[in-house]
Length: 467
Image 1 (tube, rainbow, N blue to C red):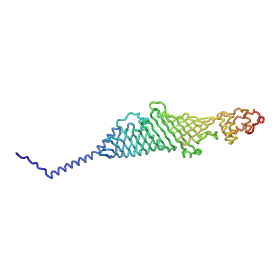
Image 2 (cartoon, helix red, strand yellow):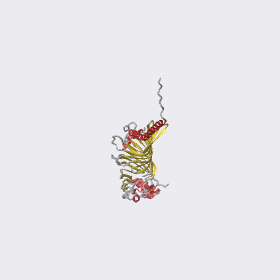
Image 3 (cartoon, helix red, strand yellow):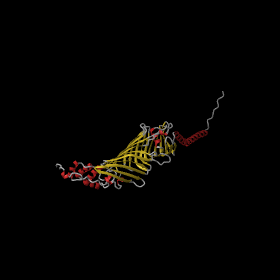
Image 4 (cartoon, one colour):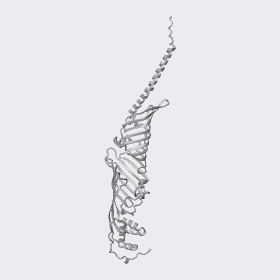
């Protein structure tokens, strides 16, 4: 039997060459993988984002692992944009995408700039869930949070930003949206705001701390679960700002306070009704504007104002209707209009001549005697005084409106009753003197007709018993 041939082991030098070749191959494969993997991963991240409707780019990235499982992607110097469901674009210094089973679970942004372009109706449709559903897995379905955000919203691509929020904290979850920060309208900074939107109830709680033009605290509630949308805002009692009190003629209102409420309805869908509502304002320790002829009249310590308002079809003007101002017995009614350049207000009212006569007598005599005379004046004078107050405020011309006043007196004397004469005699007064006092106190009124002379001589009347 022929013995099997023996295979000679490779020479030691040849084995070393093979091992070195394998090692070089592994190194080359590793280097190739290290070189190709970042590009592949970048493409993979951008592809996943694009499937969710987001165009994403970034300068660099890093990976985080938990128990050898990829748990998060950290992207640096990020830019992003999306056109559904709203047109959004922006950038962030840092974006962290938390992952579960390689699926994005949440997104966190730091130091971000976000621009939103959409009409008010489109924003409300998204908040109320009335818009068409986004594609499956859209980025809008993720929980998103952001810190130090500059947020700008404009209703169209050609418009200037209408609402800005700076230094904001922002978060969205399945339950709602929270946004808080310094806000402004256009280029005017107004103060700080906090808004909490409840997705299930289609409602929002609003809290505003205004710093300009009027320091004030406003809280409110928005309900969008029906048509029309309802908004209620409460102005908590606040003092007039120092800037306003420094204006000429305003020192008398240093103790004046403001409070009020606005109730507004905003129709949706195909409704032809304009947006509008009612406004209420209370001013304490305030005397309303009035003709100089009413100087000395008691207006009380509180002025109440209420008005209906509505927006024009193009929503560039605010129309005031059924405007009513009440201060004691002094009342004004009228209408007005407000737009970006001008505000106008036309008010008219009337006062009973008997009330004016009483006020004039008491202001002129200023004692118990004046109160008695005032009662007599109120009893013997008839008619009304009509007046108008028109205010025109051109915002480009200054901070004070131009006000014109017009008065139309129509006062007369009632016939004197015989039983009133003993009281006149006891007080030592006559109607001619009272008429002169009224004319002096109210110089804008025409002279009253002379008192009738066909009266019994007071000396012939029985005297009243003394107390």
